Image (cartoon, rainbow, N blue to C red; front, side, top):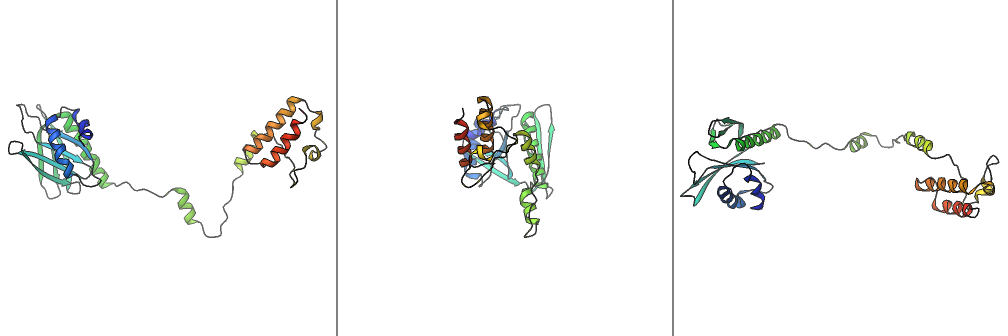
Length: 233
């Protein structure tokens, strides 16, 4: 848990104050609650027991040490209770404040300017999420499917097949259940395998391999074509 809060020591936070808050937050955080930022008061004089403010994704927690730091008072306000957040930069640090829906005003002064800006930004983000919650919409495919009446047959576009045909040479091998040899199924306008050079035979074998890879012919067909072509190479 302490390792998680080391990231809040980058803007002049008092390490001892962060350590004390960390040990207390172990028992304070609710299920699913995550700390967004921790700001620690830093007065001009040495502050032995500074006040701190913790902002989580669920609430604002004000931490005030008492009894010489042996105990600590915690006051929290959920984001539903917060009406607005404000920051005022002074010469010596900044003052962070927020109002509740019951017109209650809470403020902590002498917050280092960088820390004050960070908690102000985080508070505005949480208030914005509260006003504009993120909704997860159903995927477009699911929406279209639910609107289609039963029995409707979806039309299949042929653009991809057309484009694919432009890329792969047009070879239309004949297919029968007995896998007739290529030599017997070639049209009269095509040259016989015995008339082709090795380079042409190799190109023809590559074309059949492309057809197999793209599911246009079966493995058995390809094996038959390959065996016959190799017999002439």
